[in-house]
Image (cartoon, rainbow, N blue to C red; front, top):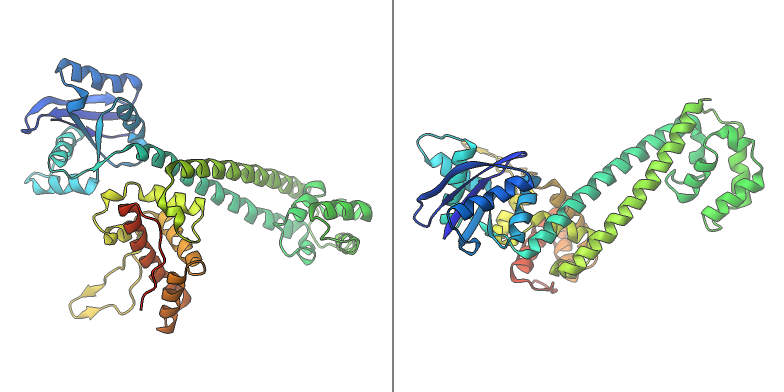
Length: 391
């Protein structure tokens, strides 16, 4: 077996080769993050007459920087092992001189491979990487849309504050349609009532009547809103941006559903978990084999408790650590809030916690812990969710 250790960085990687005895075959060399750099690794293997089938490539899980190289190596049929950086840190700290350089790190990665401290990269992981990228992009788009909606409310509050008396929410399709056509109270006041009524009726599928249009026009005539044409422009632009983001989210959701159908994961058999929530949970966890226990998975989610103890002092109120993947933590908590109404098992467990004096949020956190253990078991064993009532 030939071990290949690759230290990943943004632009320049480093790689070295060693045999099964730990003898260095190829000293650490620079690998550019480009096709020429990737092919340079292949050339080095040819120089030493090394067959791909005899190789095991190791690299740390360091975000997206190594994904291009991973896909290249996987397409060439290399066996790949993904290493937790904690493993290489432990090896580094065990040395008397705790030196850290990119070249030295390649040898530490090789040591981790020899000690079998890695998770094999499999075909499904390619789809998981794609899914993770989509889910994180979706989260970014959602956050940007939320900011735009907050700004839109601020603009309307300045220009036409009385609009809130007609619509329960600014973020209704009928309200958006109205603001797109008439973005200021002055325009609404100068428009015929029947034109406003027809516009609202069509947008709301008949929900808004002529009486609402008349009320809206009267409020527009007496509005205390500032007379500022720039606000009208900002409202129209915000609405167009929100509309664009809505269409992008729909496109992302369709692609997520397509990938999830391909993966056919058992995660979707959990009651209350949709394609989106399932995709976030599945992609953020990644390969379940990298977690030795459900406790390790809880820590990765940041749902494990912070222990505060000093001398004779022990904290009576213990909060979750909130380390690890923020997006995964959100998805698990969100799924926990849904599963209590969709699963008899979890509903019983939730009500038991309430009966013990726990608050709703505290009980949901307990549900999140139980759900994490269930997900860990399901993914490890690749089995569907089953209701299991406890005494």
